[in-house]
Length: 373
Image (cartoon, rainbow, N blue to C red; front, side, top):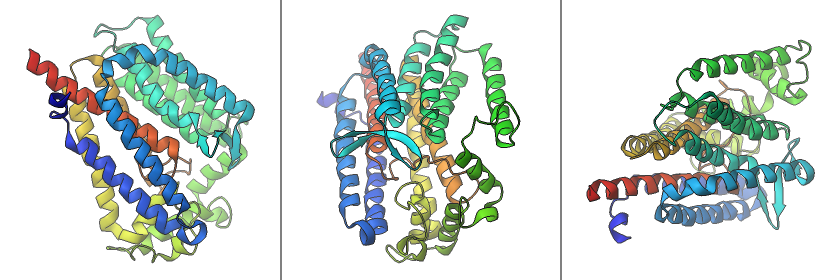
């Protein structure tokens, strides 16, 4: 075991740890005046649990995960069904299951499950998959995506779909089917566009508040006190930070509560206001280096299964980073997608940490297999 630990990629531990630390500090400064230290303390506890699971995942042979994934997928689907029946409602959507004082969000868990299940299906061999296997992969993506969309949670559903489609397009076993995937994505985009413009029979594909968010994205000034308020305040917060920022706890938008849910969806705006352009680019750089280390892990993985897991993690993190920062600076619609390792949330923090631990397991097993040869 100790010989395996010597082959760890230290940056795969260090970078998430730094991001977790930034998260706790920022959440404390953003919520201390209204909620005391409780919110930051809970985030710190979630980060600690995530670190423990990260280490445990590293010590576990990732190849054994292939045998557990079908069962985990089934449990995940059951949890999504429970959300529909007994889910805790907030912000107009039933997304959480109350477990004592902890709120479990099955949709966030499925962001990891979809990576593992597709890696297991697509990584069985390097030979091209037949039509039946391909449609099985599509079904595995569609079932949780539709269940999450019904909550309704468009943002999480988009992450699941984007991650799954990205893995299918990257996989060496999916060839002619890529044309089918591209056509399917184009059709979905067309249906959403028609729903936004109220074209029958697609009028009800998007909920009313989702249409309002898209409309506010196109023109934030149309409803500055309603659906466009969040974006307007976020852009003000980002701009007011300047080059070096106003300092922790000194920002007017975040500290005076002009910026809604600053510790969750709009934490990047809080970071930009406190640490300015330099701090914002610093956070983005941390994610860039983390993504680079994950791509290296994908390149050195000794099997298709491990490679696809790392690629799936990269796609997920990149998509969440792109959309979250985009909606903070007004170039993406508000969809409620959290910023990995930074936004408040226990389920998302633990899930991301677990995925990094699995990637670390792939790195350590690569080095050991190479040595034995």
